[in-house]
Length: 55
Image (cartoon, rainbow, N blue to C red; front, side, top):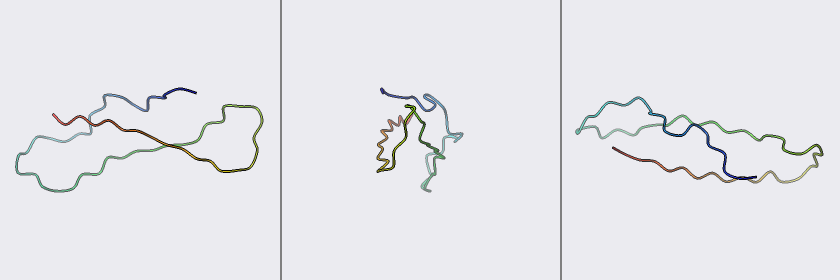
């Protein structure tokens, strides 16, 4: 299975403020999706890569 975009190029609703020094939370969600008919017990390992652009 290849890369799966999870909402590319979405703004997070902030306004520019050069004096802003607070932390900012970015709401993210993820889930596992069945990709095969057979399911077996075991580890469910995952990885995600996020590329953020600050403008």
